[in-house]
Length: 218
Ligand code: E4P
Image (cartoon, rainbow, N blue to C red; front, side, top):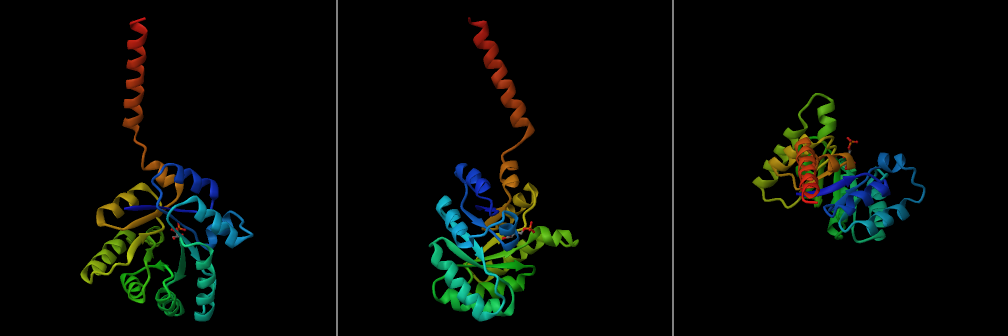
């Protein structure tokens, strides 16, 4: 399973990259706005230079021509740029065009398995089903990941399931259990995945016993 970080914050990206387990980055216009980016292309380039993996850069246009033009411009920034396109009709047309040109696409804002199927048929490299936002409205986000997995496996589709809107480690574990190819998550989830109180307790005891031993032999 690949781990992506879902942020435009360079310090957080560096922190995750330094752990050596980061496979890519996703951003969106809200995340870019949160860190107050003025030079958008320059910011994407900095991210690409920090992480050896795909970096999703989202288009703002919502019409076919605009999405295609923006997608081509974003793709020129760095070979790791993956153009993120929303699941709308104009977006599907644009995915078909850009994918045929060899541009990597992450189709975002996926909320049902048929949207994922259409994106995969159009040539997207990734689809991003949003788990947390479905949970927020009382639906079962994990069920969506499971259904997309079944649909893609039924037809041997190579499009990767990039589980998005991952809010906590239970989401992450469930994604791994049902076979999501990628999970994108905040730094807090990456850090929480390595924590367990019994690990801390066990380590404290090992260190205390070691100290006792070394003191007793002096
Ligand atoms: C995915 O690529 C999105 O950027 C992201 O996961 C959305 O998460 P949110 O629902 O927590 O905003």
